[in-house]
Image (cartoon, rainbow, N blue to C red; front, side, top):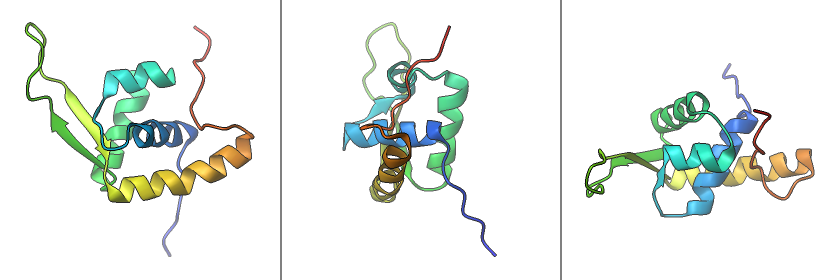
Length: 106
């Protein structure tokens, strides 16, 4: 018997943020700032989504001078379908218009 787990609210938020970017690439740091989540939360989610075949990754090809290349992330077709599937129930459960998380207390 296969156990199906619902994604965490943080995973739903990452999926929604990547879905909003469409075909564009996103940096993990930018996702952390936009979602108000710590890197220790966002990067494991991105790694897990990549391993499960929902996110594709790439390295920045032309980083600005003086800064190392950053890892880039975007949803593939399977990831976009997952984002659509989890976004509607998350909005209905929260009564919100977007599954993004608000920054927590400092």
